[in-house]
Length: 162
Image (cartoon, rainbow, N blue to C red; front, side, top):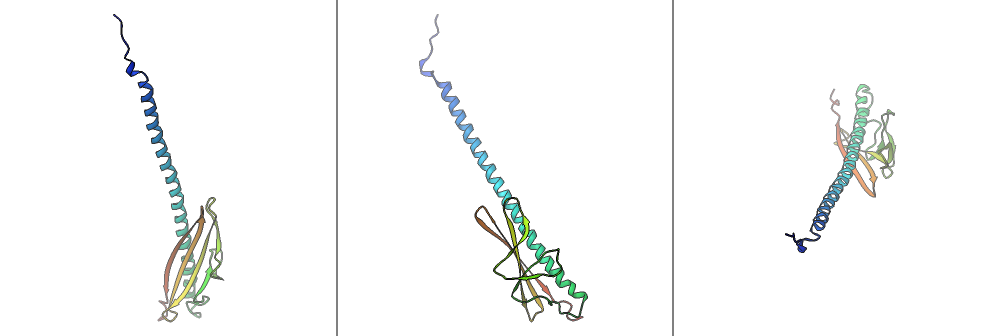
């Protein structure tokens, strides 16, 4: 008795292997694309976190500057600040440095290969100089795109009636 091979099934295993490899490659390619996007978003998220921290730090430094006036009642609480002016602040200095508003200067902080963050503090007075509006703006450039984080706070002359 002889066994006859079915000639219609020739190459079927080869086709099944090719289909399986194609499905596997498509799956791996999709997964790698997802990983790449995840890493890119992680970098953007880390940069945003750093920028928010720097903006918050700028407001805290200005608040410390204003609060130090509380202990020396001979000066107004907004002494040393000019409404409509821009300042550069750093923890290494005790007083804010007035700068030209259009030219923000680097904060001297680098994040990887992204470049420097720029922070500028804008100050305005409201309600007859009893309110100081402090706006901390942090900008940076990464991969051809510009990013910005802006925080604003108000400092009130709460000790004027003491």
